[in-house]
View 1 (cartoon, rainbow, N blue to C red):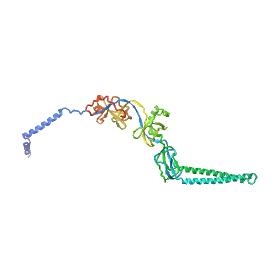
View 2 (cartoon, helix red, strand yellow):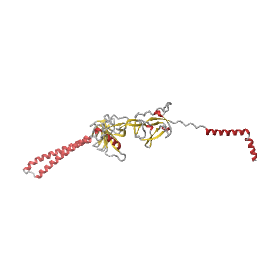
View 3 (tube, helix red, strand yellow):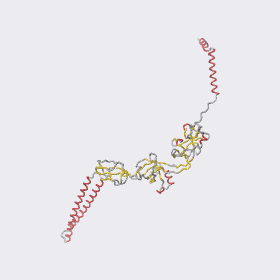
View 4 (tube, rainbow, N blue to C red):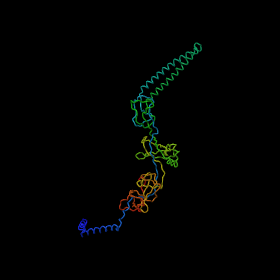
Amino acid sequence: MRRKYAAMFVRQFMQPWRLALLLLAALLQVAGCGQKNQGPAQAAPPPPEVSVIKAATSPVTLLEDYAAQTEAVEAVEIRSRVGGILERQAFKDGSPVKKGELLFVIDQQPFLTALSQSRANLAQAQASHLNSAQNLARLKPLMQTRAISQQDLDAAVAKERADAASVEAGKAQVRQAQLNLDYTTIRAPRDGMISRALIRPGGLVNASSTLLTTLYSVDPMYVSFTISEQKLNELQRHYNLRDARKRPDFKVKLIDGSDYKYGGKLDFVDAAVDPRNGTLPARLVVPNPEGYLRPGQFVRVIMPGQENPNAILIPQKAVQELQGKRSVYVIGPDNKAQYRDIVANARVGNNWVVEQGIKPGELVVVEGIAKVKPGAPVKPVPEGAAGNGDAKPAQQASDHKPQKAGS
């Protein structure tokens, strides 16, 4: 049986033309492998194109800003000294008021009644005192003729003195009743901006406990913030903070980033440093004649800084930040990228001020950072020329200057 199948295989597959095709296919496969082993290597891809700037020095004034909040120099809580029903509100919520301007009126009828009663009590005491004084005047001559006893005279003297004291007590009650009546009209204790009323007409007011509203002073205004111990030491080295005339001016930025038109003077620095964070509460006094600032606004205080004549500015987009550390890519003479850690703690506009890590004249990658690998070759071109057909090579980009701060 095996011989029969072998004979059939030879008749079907070992025919001359089939055998020739099998041999030709084997030769072609061997030739292809040879070409793969002996063929030339494929050309390496061109290095990636990146935008660079040349690090250069320029004078910069370093400024630091701190989060701050405005505060009224005086914030007066308006409370009533007497209790009763609030009868009238005489001001508009949130409006400016002048010293002595009427704010609230409490129902005066009970106090008018009390004043009338105290006056009547005073008149009664005065009449009693008049009678006792007249009796004493009549008894004194009789004592000289021994017509009355000494005891009778002493009783008359005591009665006159007691009635006189009752008159003084009555006068005090009248003054107190008049004072309580005056307290029913509540007036502004100073000029300022008044808040909204917390009690409306018809509401019950408890003496000395019910808060009616709050009156805030307007001009000047406090700006409170916290300053670091290090920055305070710098200010003390350059300025005489103890002399109010020699203290530097501090700028104030509003929440929209615009500059407030008036500067402020340092008015207060706390006596002790907070050991938890190394800061001290501080405060500025800022003019506010137009009333533009209001208590509780969030602003930023710009600290006066020192000029650095040889600062190196690097665009923010060129700096990589990771876990508080900052780094850049610098292009070496062989057009290979070098990873470089830098020290940069301050910014001017959109640029970092580099303190360590970059030297003047070095090329720094500003665009195309994602295409860069440490030690890999790149094609550096001046910033703004990347992607143009006439882009100059790295050595020709050495005259390119970084943008100025704030540009």
